[in-house]
Amino acid sequence: MRKVISQFGEGPLQQKLSTGDIHFLSDAEIAKGGSGTGPSPHEYLGAALAACTSMTLKMYAGRKSMNLENAIVTVDIDRVGDVETFSREIELLGNLTAEEKERLLEIANKCPIHKALVGQIQIKNPAGKLIRAGFGIASLVWSDQCLKLS
Image 1 (cartoon, rainbow, N blue to C red):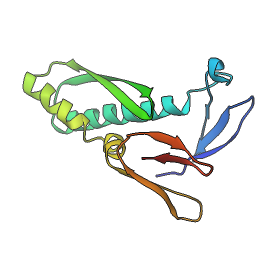
Image 2 (cartoon, helix red, strand yellow; image 1 turned 45 degrees about the horizontal axis):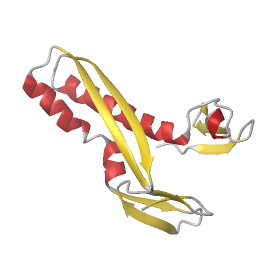
Image 3 (tube, rainbow, N blue to C red; image 1 turned 135 degrees about the vertical axis):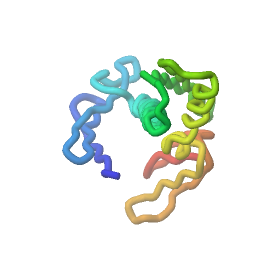
Image 4 (tube, rainbow, N blue to C red; image 1 turned 60 degrees about the vertical axis):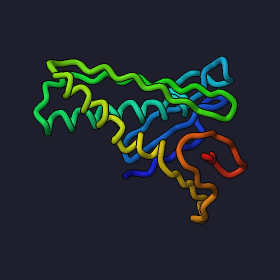
């Protein structure tokens, strides 16, 4: 997997991101002190889960010759206190049996991003030392060095 690099962009919070030759932006909403020029980090996290879920369903349905025309995945992230709650809706379009739909919804939980979010996460600092390890998304807290999941 290619590394993602972030550096300061224009305005108060904008970040210029790159992975390989692909360049994109992240920013906060205007109401939150940003310029609104790109998705927020939380929106990218939701996008990662949505895209990975849809890709996983497309690959599985293709291998099993299912008539899945589209999978529309919507992710919303809500924070209450220190708990992040991911709400994921999956709409399956196509000529599918009830059994195929049920199996596809099971497969959705096998996408790598879903597995990462509910599994053990380790974030290391530049020296390679483990800062914090956690299981799943229980809470997000900031430290002076990086984002920690606990």
